[in-house]
Length: 174
Image 1 (cartoon, rainbow, N blue to C red):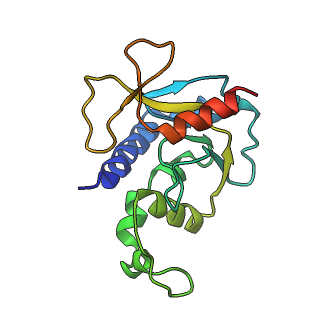
Image 2 (image 1 turned 180 degrees about the horizontal axis):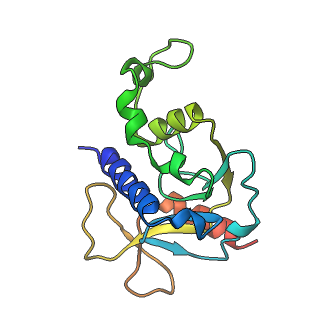
């Protein structure tokens, strides 16, 4: 019932298009995000220090790993960050069931898989204060969370994840 492999495959297809079209030579920084994000305030991603294999994700929605909804990454680390499928297929299944100290993992989800693979690739993830939240309209379909509350001041737009919205409001008031 999960959609984790779908996002990993979409990112694999993206990695292939990046290579085929020589996109890495055109940009220093990449922002992978969702089309259904509403930016409440300025996203100052150009100020992030991406040295030493560092990438940035917004706070919240990590679910025991790293959120897959938004990523700021350097051109040096873009392919390693999005090309998850080959390493996923090469890994021993027990790596998904046990932690480093051989204790069973209670729940494996896309976020925990990302955390594990990025760590294995030597990528470092830093959080930044959330400036966006996931939104929807009443016509959107989903297999997960349905939007229930209206975004104040934006007719027809609804809040999909209240925690994201509240975090965005807190960070954008500063």
